Length: 278
Image 1: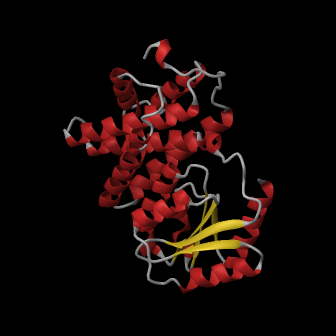
Image 2: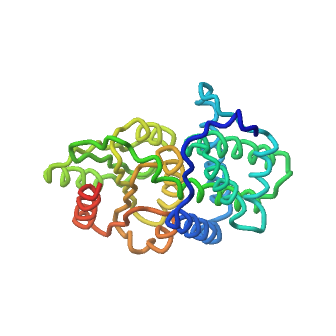
Image 3: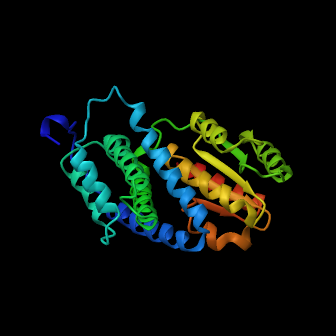
C-alpha cells in the first residue's frame, strides 16, 4: 500500500487498555471454541467472515484502498502461531495514521473476505480459520471504543429482544413493562429471525441492547447474535438476562458481554448505572 493511498490523520497508537481487551477477548474466544460444539464454532466463524466482509461492499465511496498482498499478510498473521501478529499489523497501520474506520471497514473487511475464500479453497484448515476469525473479532473488540456515538440519546432508551428461536417471551415482555414504569423507552423485538433482528438493532439509535434467554438451549442463537452485533453495532452495550442465567454464566462470561443480569432488578440497576456513566 503506497503512502498516496492512505488517508492519514493524527497518529493514534493502541493504548494499554486496548491491548488488554485484545488479549482477554482472544483468550475468551479461544476458550469458547473449545467448549462449544464444532458445528456451532463453524457457524460462528462463518458469521464473523460474513459480517466483517459485508462492510467492504458498503463503502465504495471511500478512497482508501488496500493491497492484496497486505491483506494476505494480515490473513496469514491472524492464523499463525503468534497470537499477537495480526494485532501488531493493525497497530502499525494506526501508528502511521491510518484512520480506525478505514482499518475496521476496509483492512479487516478485505481480510475477512480473503479468509473465507482461502477456507473454501482448502488453503486453510477449519482450525486455522477458527483461530483467525477469533483474533480478528478480538481486534475489532479492542477498537470498539473508537466507534462510540458522538451524540448519545437524551432519554433513557434501550432495545429488549428475545434471541431468535426463543418461544418463552413472557419474561422479556414483563421486563419491558417494568422498565417502562421506571421511565425507560423500550423497543421490544420478539419473533424475529437472526438476520431480521440484527438489521433492526443496527438501525436503532439506542446504545443498549437487552437480550433475553431461557436456558442452555439459547446459547447457540445467543452466541451467533452476540458475534453479529459486536461487528455490526460496535458501540452497542449488550446485556443478557433470563431464567436460569446462573447455570450458563460460565459460558456467557466468555462472550464479552457488558452485563450478565440474574434478575430484572439487577438489570435495571446495572443499566441505570451504565446510562449515567455515559
